[in-house]
Image: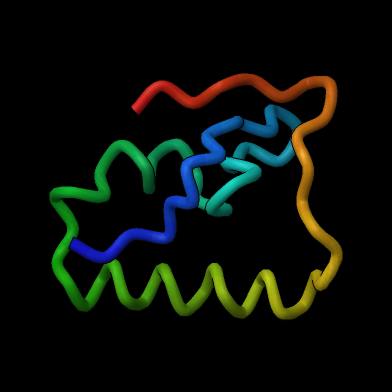
Length: 68
């Protein structure tokens, strides 16, 4: 199963997304139940977001590990 996970599972509480892959907690929790087309759509959106923000995302204070 394709996944954008890069094994840097830290939740940015301010943004509500994982600083590693950019997914929301809901997307992480439901990932294995999504259809392949839905996962591809989300991965494309995540890539577009990364392309718009070229600087590396780093875990900062206010971040916490994500429990999958």
